[in-house]
Image (cartoon, rainbow, N blue to C red):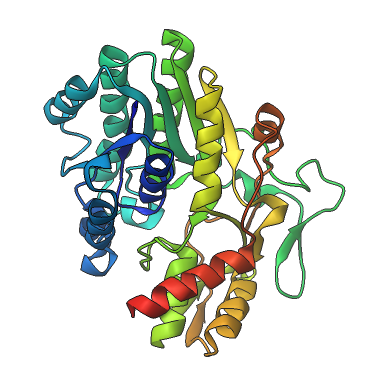
Length: 353
């Protein structure tokens, strides 16, 4: 049986990938050195998830506590498994645009240079493998904020006659906008993944995600919107809404649905592809709507305050148009809606806290 290599393997999308492919019978190699704890503190550590994977999967899962920027160590792993690796799923990242401004060197080296290390190792040791990168909608910068939006009772919404009414597709420019430094480092990685596909004819794809979420998310103040929101609701911790009257809209995709999309691509890969992927019109909510759902499911009121200062470059409204991916892979379908996602997060966190 072939091997799947997953970076960020103890994180939300990484661990979902590990479980998904292990259950299909693949052997899985995971690379994760718990930098999430370095970024966001011990409460955001993913070691608990790493240990669950190792206990549940046994010999099907081999874990390496390695930094993806360490070229020597990464190449050593690729050499060891070179004859077996058929898929690389790259989810490891510094994921917060707020954090990136505090240490741009670390942000860029993890997101951009780390991706280069992995792409080149793939080219040198298993060039026929499929390479999947979890990119982000932040590659579009703040361009979505200049769409014609109107304020409704609980959310901002786009003009009903606009081209992007059903969601933002891959035609949106990534130029001439404010990305945040995090967005810039992810753009660099995204373009690298495309270029290795187009220049070297490698089977690569950048999946530009909306809000990626699910019960395995170690939510923190600076990253993990729904998971952190539910955590604050359960524990009666103070929460702050930043700007846009709390009506900013995000589409939310369950980690399982995203990884299932990866699997569809793996079975019939293409070279240098880009896909917008998220909850689309199927699964989305505003901040105020998310708070209401969390309160109803948890049976508790959230202690929140409002700040007029929105995060620089933050999206007012973002919903993904996934039509391109669905046209290429018509067998892919959503399993989870927003209410299902929040309910699963509540169940997982209730047992944890």
